[in-house]
Image (cartoon, rainbow, N blue to C red; front, top):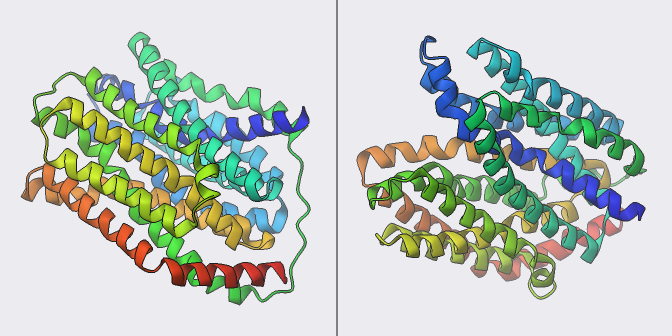
Length: 393
C-alpha cells in the first residue's frame, strides 16, 4: 500500500509541470482585456504563459546540483511552497508586471519540483519497474494537461482569476510527500566525476532533447494558425485537435515499458522520430481536418515514446551522486527548446507559407530518425561501455 501511495504522490508532483500552461491558457484574452490600460498588455499577457519556461530552464540545473549535495526532500518542500505563493499571486494582484514577477518565481518552483521528482523516480525504481513508471508518468502528465485545459477554460468563463486558485493543489500534496517519500541514501562514488562529465552519450541526449522540443512545440504554437488557413475558425476545434495530440502522447507512453523490452534506446528514437516526421509531412500537405486529426494523434504517439525514452536513458547513464545535476540540465535543454520554438519558426512563417514550417520540421525529424538508425550499433556499444563503468563504481 505504501508503494501505491508513493507512486501516486510522484505522479501528482509530475502534473505540476503541465499546470503552468494548461491552467492559464484559456483565460489569456480576458487578462489582456482586463489590463488593456497597461502598455503592451497583449504581449505581456502572453508572457504569463511563456515566461515560466525560461526560468524553469535556469532553475532546473541549479536545483539538480543542490539536491546532489544536500538531499532531495528539503528543496522539494521549498519548491512546493514557492509554487503555491507565486502561482496564486495573480488571483489577488492588480498589476500586470507584478503578476509576471510571480510567474518568474512559478517557473523557478517548477524547475525545482520537476527535477526533484524525476530524480526520486531514478532513486526509488530500477529496471523494468522504472521503465513502466516513466511511461505512466508521461501518460499522467498528458491526462493532466487535457483535464487542466478543460478546467481552466470553465473557470476562466466565470472569471479570469479563478484558474489561478488551482495552484493551491500542492497544499493537499505536501502531507503525502511527508508521509510517503523518504530521503534516499546516496553513497558518494570514488569514480572520477570528470569521466562522467565528458560522456558523449549524455551530451547527445541533451542535444536530442532541445531538438525534439523545438520541433514538437510547433504543434501548440503553429497548428491553430494552420487550421485557420484550411478554413477552421472555431477555437473549440483547435482545442479538440490539440487534445487528440495529447491523447496520442498518453496512449503510446503507457506501452513504453513493453516497447523498451524489445528495442534499444536508439531504435525507439529512430521509430518515434520517423512517425513524427511522416505526421508533419502529411499535415503540411493536406487541407482535410480529419487527416490533420489523424496526423496529430500519430505525432503525439511518437512524442509519447520519446519523453520516457530520454528520461530513462539519462537516468541509466547517470551515477547516483550526479543524477540530480544531469536531470536538471536535461530539463533546462527541454524547456529552452520549448521557449525557442516559436522564436525560431516565426521568420519561416513570415518568409514562407505556414505549411513550410511543418515541412521543414518533417525533414529535420527524418534526419534525426536516420541518424539514430545509422549509428545505432555504435551508440549501443557506447551505452554498454558506460553502463559497465557505472556498475564498477
